[in-house]
Length: 63
Image (cartoon, rainbow, N blue to C red; front, side, top):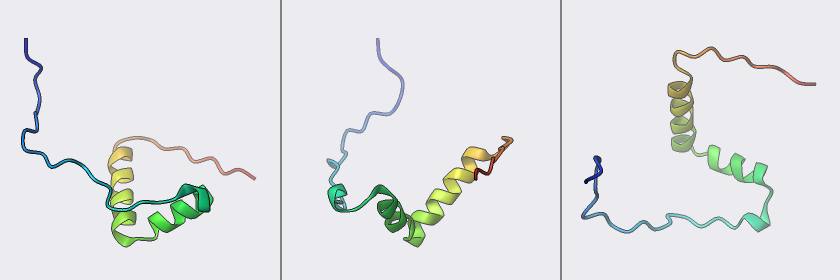
């Protein structure tokens, strides 16, 4: 029996485009650094919009 789907037969092995040392900065600084790149921020916003499309989102402010 075969499993339906795609099978990459000529895929180049994945390699890291960048290496980030998480021991040298807090996670909040890492997120700030990553999201400060326009391409990453735009992609992130588009993904959130696609995820939220057609859904009712309730935001509760704390504090």
